[in-house]
Length: 110
Figure (cartoon, rainbow, N blue to C red):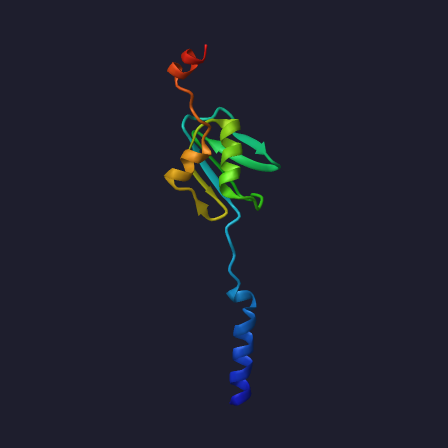
């Protein structure tokens, strides 16, 4: 009985494949306006798009906010973003999107 308890404790300590925690490797985003492309390749990753939503089944292991910023520069304002199991908050989305320059600021700069 004692050896059985030791064996169970050893297996629990190693984690085993059944206990391994896997992180989602997918990504999704919603845009402020519909996209005309049905897919795009960004940073070596295929994103399939429909309307204002794009999804990828396999994304790189990069920081979500940095990836969101890079995609926003290419695609325009992003209104929702999930990456490898992390969904950005409204505050993070505000950091993600490129700063909008108000027309009054442009006129003042002239």
